[in-house]
Image (cartoon, rainbow over all chains, first blue to last red):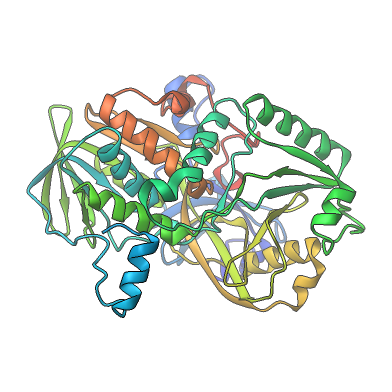
Length: 90
Length: 416
């Protein structure tokens, strides 16, 4: 893992301040149907390479972030506030 | 070549110059009846039982690196069948029984050592939970003994019984659990499969899967195209990637798990001991090094290395259980990529194509399952129906709501 994670609110911070949640997948609408919910809860792309993940800046601003991270090199390409989920990766 | 006391003496007398290679290094043939993707413990065991028990001939095992380079050589070598759920227990007990006869079966010294696996408990609630698990094990015909504090003290006097936060109240002991030399498992299965004319093709990475009319017809590899009658995937941490080549999205995440070995010590820890108040498990290898591990690093990873923060965490948990570890020097640490499933239990099932078979989702319990995984997967491939102990490990259980969540953790793979 990279030693630093860029937080859009706090700047570059040590990764120990953050907790990872996992795949940043947009939550389906409540009435989206069983297939959409099954995919959301259980299925993962699990790529070898860049991946959008939820990280929580628990020891900082306590905002949820979407961090784009490479799962092989652990390079971090981008991070943004989780409120921007659904928008294209910058 | 068979190993026996006589063969060892005779080869010793001739200066050990007449041993032959344990398996061939064949060029891939244009096609095989069964192609197994992944030459780890599970893939090799599958090939071995497929040839030996189910009489299938013309099998290839494709390994992207070399035999023993993946998780089969990266685990902490523990075997046990101390599972509670009725979907899991008979399967892991089958595995334990296969371990017990394995060395005679494949004529290779895998150093199977049933030295006991002890899970410590630290509170009344945890004791109740372990009692329940022990009772469930006994109902399945598996050995389990609940030890009180004094009994644990007589086994392992150096544990931190008076720990202010997590005093040790006792433990659940499975005496038939223990350790196995992990590399020898890979070598033994590879050698055994080779003896049944299985082609073990190393340095052969699958790059794509060719399909036609709802069937897999072959795989493109770094060593050329190989046709297949049946395609079996046992790619562990890379399962999602290989399945994606066939257009299948899996309920898996790949995570890194670290393991450690210390400098060699005189005999210190006789069996396997696990900490109940944190995630830490330790045993002592026959060379004397303490072999231990802890939690996943927590983030998705395909890199076979971990973080220092986790190293520190594991060391803290270890020291909380055995204070004497503070004076221990760690020799090596390494990481392996776990195929973490969404309920913490594996998948042994047919895929979405007619002749595609899937063996994945072993989380960090894959090593102990190696024999049964191979046996049951071979059964599925040969007969097109699941082995009776592996019926629950279906791919569609997530959609249908029949998850097998031993830890009660939910669909959060990094917590299983």
